[in-house]
Amino acid sequence: MTIVTTRSAGGTPHGFTASSFASLSLDPPLILVCLDQGADCFPAFIAAEQFVVNIVTPAHAKLATRFATKGEDKFAHGNFESDESGYPILPDAAAVIRCELEQAVPGGDHVILIGRVHDVRIGSGEPVMWYRGDFLHLGQSVR
Image (cartoon, rainbow, N blue to C red; front, side, top):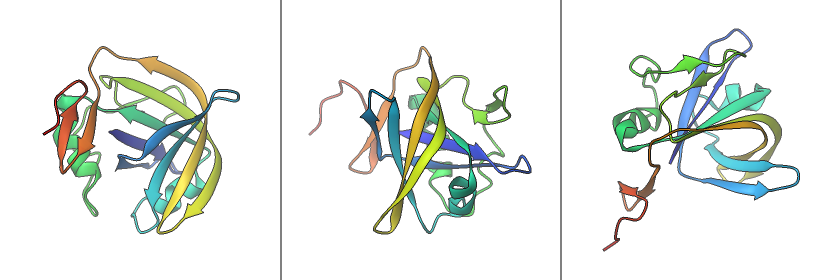
């Protein structure tokens, strides 16, 4: 599970929770993440030059839920920091992947954001996934 963030030209942070995230290419290094076209932050991401994929840990469960909720003040309660370019990052994420927006491809009621990986920082936490309406730790048995 990921919290994807960006900022507007004026510096306002925007973000959403995405469970649809994948590696797309090794050469060049590309990832993809899917964004609902009805999301409040949709215009900001389409206009963005860069975005950040923060891979969440169990400690981010409430934060990921907030970022999945429409209309919430998503950045009101969180320990986001700004990277050197002013983009919001989760310093304690399992990984932080900074990308340049390569392309936005329509896909039904979503858009597929393709990002060229600029750099990656690996944290110490274990990532979680969203499965059947709950957070699933990697390696955890599924019933």
